[in-house]
Image 1 (cartoon, rainbow, N blue to C red):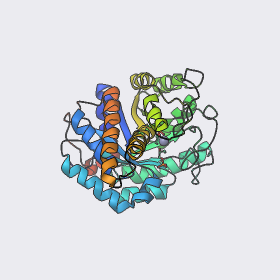
Image 2: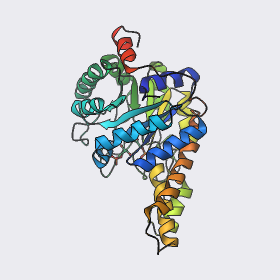
Image 3: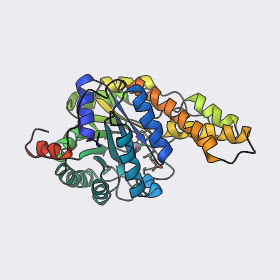
Image 4: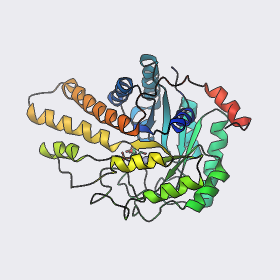
Length: 340
Ligand code: G3H
Ligand code: 13P
Ligand code: ZN
């Protein structure tokens, strides 16, 4: 199966009321872990690459690894998505490279750090929608800013400082025509999201419920949605790591979001924790070891296990063979004749 548009994956998820995990990748092992998890659970899936991932892998390596994934797992619908595109140029280069979906994150300026004005956000997002839909490619926008991140893309702000305003969300979707909207509800990227198990004072699930009521046809996206399981933190710390106690987004909150229009759930940190724990354990227990395969193989297995759990929790499991892929050229026609 060739890469499919994210719009088709989310349209199908919406019909049956399930969520789809969007998992970040930076290398071959992560792509393999996700595709094996998708095969085992029969799940459609979104694979996403940040700007950092694209420069780490080099676009051509990433592209050919993804082509290998479609060749080896023809039964799995998979979309390739640009995570946190910082500018129309970044999105254009992703589309030229073969991505079937792009995020333009105009909630921040092109530096990926400074909170942007609403007008700026609408302008760059609209520009990307016009360019992408012409080619059948899906667009995710973001309104409101996530909490701090030490590096990469993120405003470094207090997570509750820039929650998505539901009135603005309606105007944003109407003015831009995005397929999916990332909303800020108090989460942050990375391991340090909450210093206690989150309740409604620090995780604003009510925003999702409110936005979904006003925009029932817009697919909502939850960023910063790793659950940061304690058992994964414990493995890292048991083998020389120094993570501070921290909490992520509980699975039951994500499931609540899915009941209220969340169709895409972004997860990166949980994969990173799973991989790092296993590598720390192996190298501590085998100080004589030096064959990378001896720790990358169990690391890949550990990531696969986490992804399988997420695929089951989000209920995308079992839906891989529900539909045949729609070519991007047909998606483009559907956007241009107003069907989408
Ligand atoms: O946007 C956040 C994702 O976890 C990607 O992170 O920019 O370090 O690749 P990254
Ligand atoms: P986590 O850091 O919670 O995994 O979030 C990833 C993300 O939102 C990527 O865009
Ligand atoms: Zn994100």
